[in-house]
Image (cartoon, rainbow, N blue to C red; front, side, top):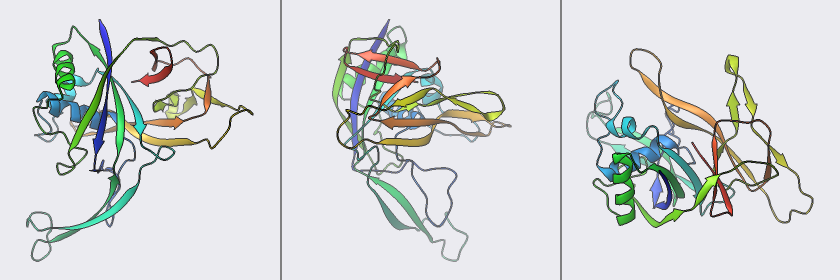
Length: 259
């Protein structure tokens, strides 16, 4: 039996570091992504994080099959305010320069907030534990958004009635969603087309970001992010191709994608 719940996650700051950026400025993902959300949930239930190079952490291995959805809150057309923070790392281990002092400049999210959906399997003990801790607003370890000085908290634990959504007409997706499906030779095909409505009033937006959905072994137990193309929009959509990404109709008035 499955149970769909959501919580609203907040932080004063966040830094979801992009691994492919180097000095002088380290960049952050704008959107919360699945590996980061599983890390937050892992801290809440007390599972260990990364310890040994080439070994995936316990929280990820135990939660990898959990379906999640992410809906931005308090955003501006899908984007969050960002600021640049520069600080000194004086541990003596960060730099080979004399004195061991390293100047670090990071792009940082300001007041990010996300509604996070979890489709729990109530026959799974780990899922049961996670659901219980979330409902009681209890965490075994302090969860944080990318860096341990950026702690997170959550509100509004909510349980939903839900059903699988079958697209027979135009519809809107309230969460971020995977917008294409992979084909051969690294090609993709669009899953959704925007539907233009002349009656639509006000500003509309479409936000796109390439986000991690998990980890992949590139050889010799060297793990890197596995990416997919995501979108978030207030446009109505038409389903272009049938795909394996699950759409849910919650409370008969909101459609989200879980992945």
